[in-house]
Image 1 (cartoon, rainbow, N blue to C red):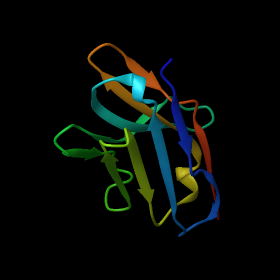
Image 2 (cartoon, rainbow, N blue to C red):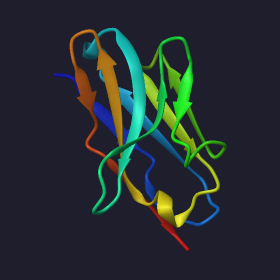
Image 3 (cartoon, helix red, strand yellow):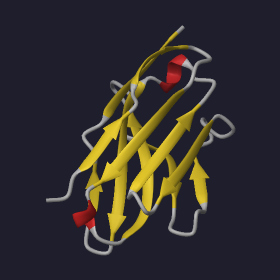
Length: 115
């Protein structure tokens, strides 16, 4: 059974940093694109950052220059380094992994940024 295990969320003051990790079980098979999404209370889930197999990345305008997505293909893991965090970054963060067969989502990890 495929599982995505997220970690790294928590409470941080504005201006601080957090690093999220999302590891997929080896049974997932070949991974294509990987990404991070977030959903704040009362808002729709939105793309934060994505990375393809070649390492090309894309970011939401709101996080450009502050967040960095990376991946370790040998460990089936995607990371999100979040710096200069703002209260508006508060949300549940979800990782998403795309394979040839299906898309998989993590359960989410809470990130709370206090002002």
